[in-house]
Amino acid sequence: MRLFLQKTFFIFFLGLIIQGCETLQNFKFEGSEAANKYSGWDAKQFHDNARAAMEKENYIKAIKLYETLEARYPFGDYAAQTQLDVAYAYFKNEDPDSAIAATDRFIKIHPRSPNVDYAYYLKGLINFNRSIGFLERFLPTDSSQRNPSNVQESYNNFQELTRRFPESKYAPDAKQRMLSLRNNLAMYEIHVARFYMKRRAYVSAANRASYVVKEFQRTPAVPYALQVMQAAYTKLGLDDLAADAARVYQENFPDGPPVLEHKAATVVNQIWDFIGFDQ
Image (cartoon, rainbow, N blue to C red; front, side):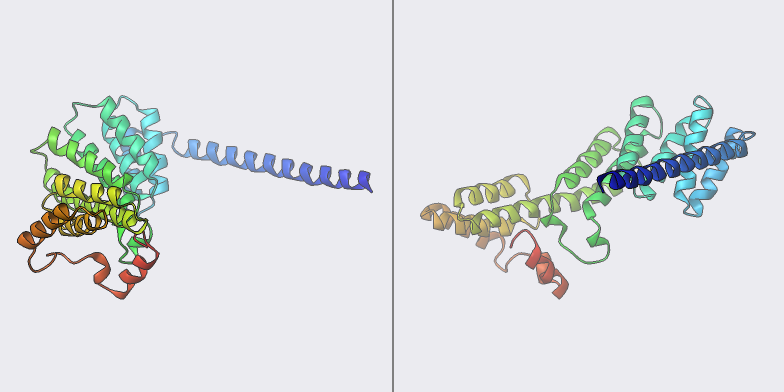
């Protein structure tokens, strides 16, 4: 019986190996066929066909053509532009890691290029889309409840763009996105502070809320930070500090927070809050 099982497993794995060899042969055949197809192409043909593939949203084909163009003509007229084009193609193909790697490579190789500002902008845009997340593309979820690492990366990318190239045509859009990202980062700190409140870690909650008031002034998160500070100081028996937070809140927001929280908008948002960070 044992010998029979051993023979059965041997035949099974032998079949897998044979199938793998056939797949490899097919892959090599397809690769050589593609090589023959493009053997007579010049740089312009690669570039034009890659652009056409991008327009048809065939991003995989565009990436292949751009990478072949770069490999065959690394010092040609299209070399620098191709590196940017393939980064954008990766971005549209929802491969952010490869897109970031491509933009970083362009910035490193071409730091004085007239298009380097676009590389910084594209890098920020890639991380900006990462911060949105899959669900938010279809549902009005609260992105400020998620890990803010991509938000911070995007903010840093746009900040570097506006610092290095203040006159860039991409700077105005970058500044607008930075405002949104900064608000997002501030509200994330509020969610963390409220989390500490629910865990009765009142000192940590007060410190986190105080950080928002100091570092994220003029954001919609400030009135909520003052509310947390008042509640945390009250729990700690620090009545003077609690009274100060209440006074500042009343002086600056007598009618309540000027921007309602995300969860107050729709039923879907309330469902998201139910499963979100604050809970």
